[in-house]
Length: 137
Image 1 (cartoon, rainbow, N blue to C red):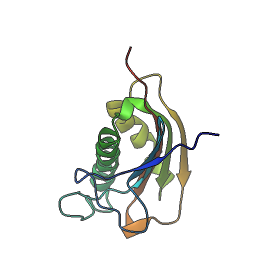
Image 2 (cartoon, one colour):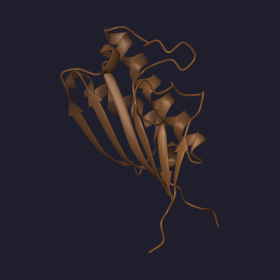
Image 3 (cartoon, helix red, strand yellow):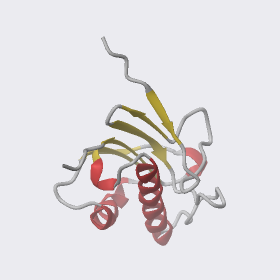
Image 4 (cartoon, rainbow, N blue to C red):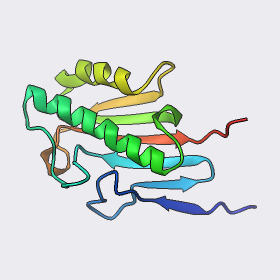
């Protein structure tokens, strides 16, 4: 049996881990991207407020953070095959779909969207992903 080594991914272009986790872990061609909340990577402060415009900013920041970690892993959002999204208010689900179309193109990754009672730092949105790196021929 061949043992595949793990590579731990870290980039300053995404928020630093605020706990005991890595931004991503790469095993072979599979990359597991940790949950990203809408922190500005430069200030480590939450973007947006708990308002209609705030959720818009938070959704975009999460996708930007996921994109940065994907890039640091050697891929991009187009390589994501599974996306898990967490919202503190499922009424924002249509907005998530709308903004997601700015970051992803069809065919879209498999996805789950889950309503939760709270998220770290009182954010309203979080996203995590699994990415498969494909080699160009």
